[in-house]
Amino acid sequence: MMVNQLPALPMPFADAALRHTVPAEDDDLVSLDSILEPEPIANALDGLLRRWGPGDRRAAASLWTQGYFGRLLRPVIAYGLVHDIWFSMKLPDVQVGLSDMATPVRFVLKPAASAPLSARLRAIVEDNVRPLIARMAKVTATSERVHWSNASFAFCRARRHVHDLWPQEAMPADVAARLREMETLMAVDHPLFRPTQTVPDAAGGACLQRRVCCIRYKLSGLKKCGAACPINVSTFCRQ
Image (cartoon, rainbow, N blue to C red; front, side, top):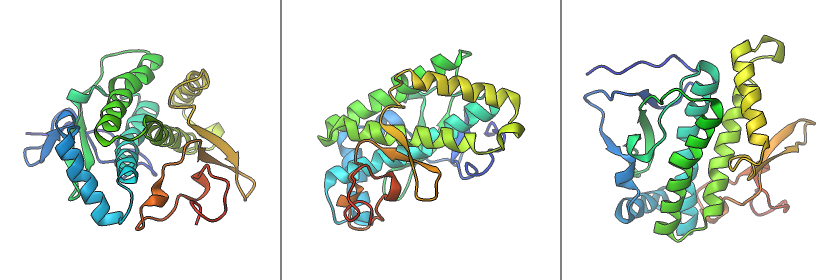
């Protein structure tokens, strides 16, 4: 069975593990729905704690959604803005390949029906982000706020990377138009915009910062989150 090939993404998206519509015969894929159950999630948290612990199980749950949103939303936003290719984000339409920790690392998605950009953004939230967060929070007894922060940070980081792909005067007109429209829509109190803010950095530029702590400092084997940390203490998260 052939894989429907997607056009290449520029750096820093070239590592995106995303396939379009049809998996290859040798793909070991499962449905996203099937891994959002207590036993598969518990197995994944055990794997994350073996790799990055010891630590708090709630922090492992946060790390699960950090990985998921980072790996999925980056290429989805990049394909949408750069190539105007969009995907169905409904949980039953998402097929995933799992890591040796039982976490999702590869995705096969179906094409989305034609729709305006406002509907695309709404579908990302309502078809994927919101229901996944509700299920993860319920199964792991974690706060939805930390998972919304993870989704927001991945979303804003992807948008910013697309923004930085070209000098402003060299950006293709269609990409610039989609980017401007997305930024306008995000500014109207969009749920994936609120949990992340832009703040000045030490070099005189700007960086993305969370409004809600991702609690990764509770996992002993991870580097801390640096400038993205919302806690204004020089030791602690920012070490």
